[in-house]
Image (cartoon, rainbow, N blue to C red; front, side, top):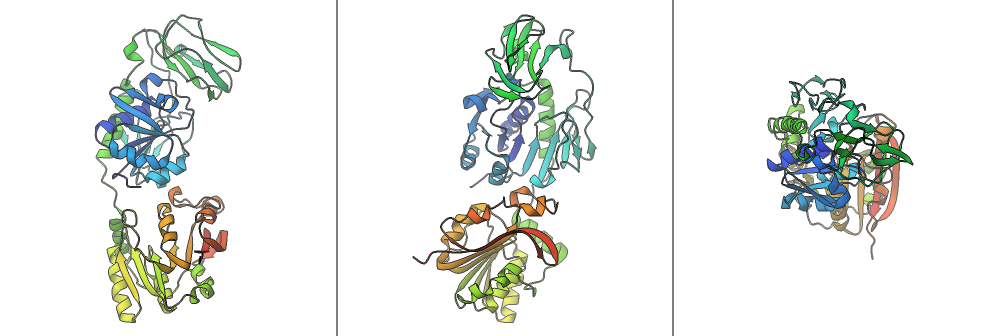
Length: 463
């Protein structure tokens, strides 16, 4: 998937998330909204929420369109005709986009947000209970007042407190809250005029009436499951259509804060710069003695193919390249880092090893064409390489993979970027055209420490 640089992924299609996406889209940022397939957001006239129900909608001159296939997101971003709204599983959208910025605009005021620091190079939380530096890198103040829209670089946003804003003397009494959980049913529409006591909706047979006369500013979509206590109806007693359709002043100020946070933050480093810096900071040792345990455990399968060609993907220090070369393979070793490639070339020449190191940015450049008799990819995960890896094998060629799996997070409790964590049995089923020779998944000892991994050896059929 060829994506533009620094994609912004906004979680939540409500009025705040939509204002953020609207502002960023007009500023030229590639932006995608993610939400659940049946969002309960009530202020749909002030949001892109209805794109999820109707397929498309428009908000103050910007269009949004529902995208059901993550494979279509890159094309939608490149065309820049509308804001794509994705409703597939969040993890799959995250893995497909690899966003440079993640904005949590779900506005779950009473929830305690999970840590999202690992989900993108820059993460921004909107609303109560976010703590800059702990839950997200930055936070934005969303409470009415002088600090509304302020960028918080350290510490928490203000806690949830106070009453809703008053319109013509009406504050909390403008709202109807779900008396119980259930499916929200309504035949009313946003902007419709209602009288006090007029039937507007129902939940599980319990009727919900307008609390006062005015026009419907908020109305959850018909057929959406809601939780008890959720805001499902809002009546604006002022009766002005401009107050219920279009961007609201509070969401706009929050969106300005998000734009400021993004535009004042430096662009994240690409793989080349990131790994060059890391190796420069900690030093680089070419060809350390200890190869991957999984590679060593499968030595008997490897030696049957020695004297042929091997590819080491994301080779890093070259420890596995050295091991393959010592088994008699002619090895192509590819990595994003100039530091690694230069050091490996020099060390290979000094030791007389048949290792040809190449600098390749695997996220934007293709693998070497091959074919290869052995391909190893260890402690690295890039799902969009899977097909290319299988294609690059000779008939009878082996693919050897081991990398982080769910057990590393779920059983060991280690934080890890979920984009680079294999789901349960994901690797087992990732190569349907290959024959699985060895597979295991769970907690193993790696470099003297417990690590949750999935490990695969698969062979391309000979005929």
